Image 1 (cartoon, helix red, strand yellow):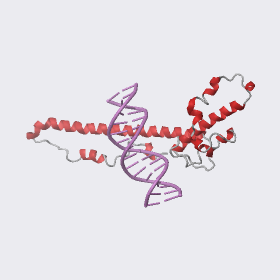
Image 2 (cartoon, rainbow, N blue to C red; image 1 turned 90 degrees about the horizontal axis):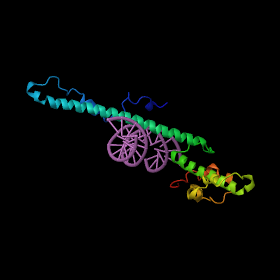
Image 3 (cartoon, chains in turn cyan, yellow, purple; image 1 turned 60 degrees about the horizontal axis):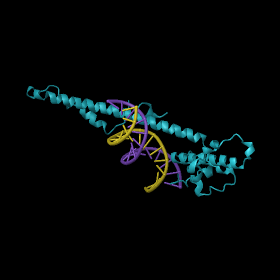
Image 4 (cartoon, chains in turn blue, purple, cyan; image 1 turned 180 degrees about the horizontal axis):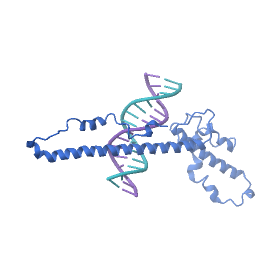
Length: 181
DNA sequence: TAGGCCATCTGGTCCT
DNA sequence: AGGACCAGATGGCCTA
């Protein structure tokens, strides 16, 4: 469980900014306005509305923080799901976010290459029904088959299609990735 | 101890 | 107006 996530509205996530609100509700609040200050009633009314708008703003901020937290959690969940479908690494260290994205990118490319190579090697008769379209997704355009991240190492000459899918190959031996996309 | 990664907060911008 | 998205700032944790 995430203690922070459990109930952000009850605890106080704003140790700094809150002081302001506390100050606003502090003993400075006048109890009985002198008569000669009655003309300032309006002013006081405005001050009160300022205080209330501060409260509204604070509540809005808290809600926004909560939503943002949820959003990031959803993003992390999606990232975890992505990790789940990627080939496992020998050492069970969890991929970082950027590694996961780059790994996935390379993995997709490798799968596409594998299919492309298999198509090239397969006898035409074995796949008569296969239309040009079926290949288009795997080798579509320049992006898919042109420059994968791990191309830097030796993309064009794998021992076989299965070599392309080797985790360490896909990740470029982990740690090699900076700047690659 | 420095550097990397991460979670969270925050204010701005865009969209509905 | 309110929510989603984004990027910068900040602080904590971990590792070499």
